[in-house]
Amino acid sequence: MGGHRVVSTGVILAGAGLAVSPLLPWAGVRAEVPVLGRGLGTSVLGFDDAAGWFVCVAGVVAAVLGVAGLTHGRAFTGFAIVPGAAGALALAVFINRPERLLDLSVTIAGLVRVGPRIEYGWFVGLGASILINVLAAIALFRRQRS
Image 1 (cartoon, rainbow, N blue to C red):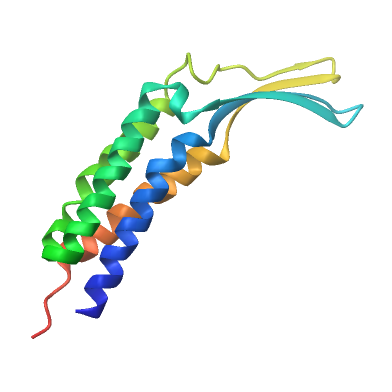
Image 2 (cartoon, rainbow, N blue to C red):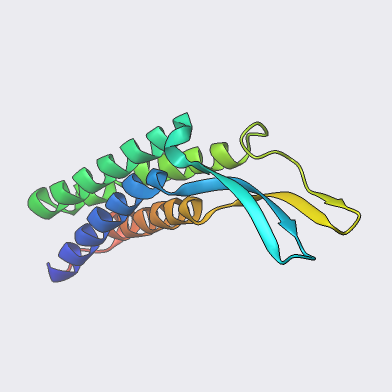
């Protein structure tokens, strides 16, 4: 019974992490001047795109299912695999849209480098969705000890 509580609590925490990841930067474009050792950049938050809102909702649903798993049984925790997978899919859609991340990587005479980059918030969301899926699978497929 104690292991089930740990898995459900993990789903709750990972769901919260997934839900807040759109508050963080997901992508950006950075221009660097190697000669000066300086760079400029701009970032896009997850909430700047519809995928960010979808990821937030998926995180909230996963956390609610984790709470339901604590109170009503591990099957509810196992169902968190659905919003976990949906969140990962939304993150993949975000990163594969060309208008969001320009396919631009340019070096001008060795003086300026310009290129897109994936920011840490996107990785937070991906890590949280993977953790939700792993924990939900454990809840679904772990044998009940008698």
